[in-house]
Image (cartoon, rainbow, N blue to C red):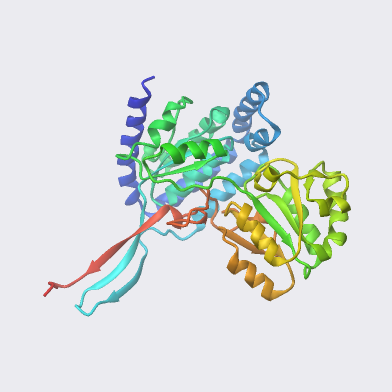
Length: 418
């Protein structure tokens, strides 16, 4: 295959489809989403069979447990994809929304209109559900999408793509509005991230290596997060029952996700009360603990933490634990080692909670809640195209609004500038 020619064709078709999508009405877009959801449910058995081929190949090639977990489709995950599509269909359509329309001294009216970005390229690894989520969000926001999944999920992604094409056809929307790249050649990524003529923004979702490559080589603007080193800080004014429940859930509810807690920070005054119980919970679930000296006095089974552990995104049943002197030291640790993704405090002291909200620099900051809530589905966005730790355009879970932009509009009545 001539990769350059193939990708140019994909880009040209996507650009043409984006113009049709920009003028598509809300009913058509919602109809497509409902039809895709129905197709996913109807074809669940076929999706599981295709996913089984990918899982078997993954095990044979030596994919680790975290990667296999992200790759796996289950009946519940397929149902979740369909539910996410329906949630997106139920959300208000942002396209065409006019805001801040005001008269100027000259007599003209100036405001802003929300508009699609155009063509969005999404590069991702492992998770087949991203194919449905990304397609749905791009469609509802009036964009065309070029989806390039990982080779490990090729059969799953193509099976989901067939459901997407069916939904687009039922709604009389262009089939090229969502194109799943058919080749697994790495050169396709290199072409996609440099096609400034056809692609308006790139969203990479995957491991650190993928995102670093995209950041280094892309000529198209990128919405990204590099990794998720998320913290939970248990304050000495915390409700300890809540703290133990949150610290357990934030780590063990699912290991291979970017919003999973990787480092637990505990105030020295309550360490003796919470760490032994958490140690028993983590031990029963097979979580390896890497700890500071103060923690190891309470949890001798923990191994000594090395400097690299405080910056690690394990995506596995491994947890770093550090006892800190106070809130100031916890915030300083997060500033030094956090990735700007999601940070949480457990406390009943409102002033400390407010300080944490104000001073911690992350795309999501939480009070008395598990970091696992940091995703588009839980935030009411229906789904997400990724978690952005950038500070320009979109930050946090990127839903419909993050996939649009605004342009100035001016309304006059024969006005001329004097």
